Length: 412
Image 1 (cartoon, rainbow, N blue to C red):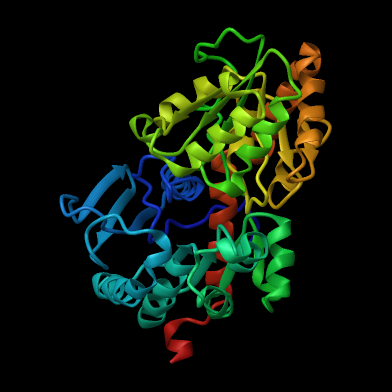
Image 2 (image 1 turned 60 degrees about the vertical axis):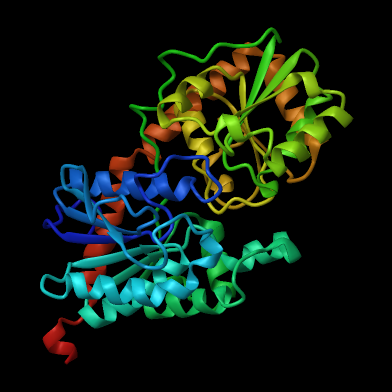
């Protein structure tokens, strides 16, 4: 079956243990995966499928089920205490998560289960084997990569890498989000023939070059960095680069709510770096913002910077490109696929403030170059990363897995 053939309506279960599609973004464990699961669910529903997202209950007031939109229901799973728990502490609850899911679904098993992140995979392997239904898995991030970059700062449970290998071999198919991930999986012992690549997506109707832009400060130029406020995202590199970019402000979006910025250890660390670099008066921290505020903020920037040490996929470059903004990103992970250099932006080495500053300065000095790269980025998003395309590619993988899997009676 090709991606162009119509696919029969399926009942699809998405498993996203810590990243609820209903969550506010920018918190410590709320980022690209929340958006991915929400948008994928919506795209599949638009394709005629019935989608249920299983995510952990982290608040006792949440109802068991919430209708997110037509065709998509979010089911809150009682696994662990009904309160926020850091994702690195959720592993002990995955057995109960999988058992609960299997119990809820046993009377009407879905056509496919698609788990997101390694701990969801553990729960989903248990449930899908009990239900005897196909399982697909998307990692979103790999423990091997995280350990390589973060070393002693990696807070993942020690079981993570072994569990990721087990999930990859137990599921029917891995859906990787970029080519770099396929290479990493091969090193883990998961052969490329078990892997399909389907990128993350972006909503080009929400992220568009036309529309309101957030107000600017007095500086002539604006750089914007958006994402979780953790050291690996590279905000310190951008702040040091800013010292080489006169008459430019840097807006950093993400982290705790605005009223929690002063107490946040990462904000305090970054403010100290900014003071030492002599740019304390040119760096603004906005904290977490609503999804509706993201596109106007992106549109307000001359250049969007994505300087992470590593980036399993990276939604922000796509959002910036969809808004017609040039991107300066590190040449890592999914950004190698998404940011076409030189058409849509520039790829620079990680942890290199001088290279980041040079690339940004080139754009800041040339409005026509900014406009041309922004327009090319928008075209690239429309041609490759629209969620309807991502949904169609994902359902095609589902269909291939179902077509090649023995039926329950065959396998019995």
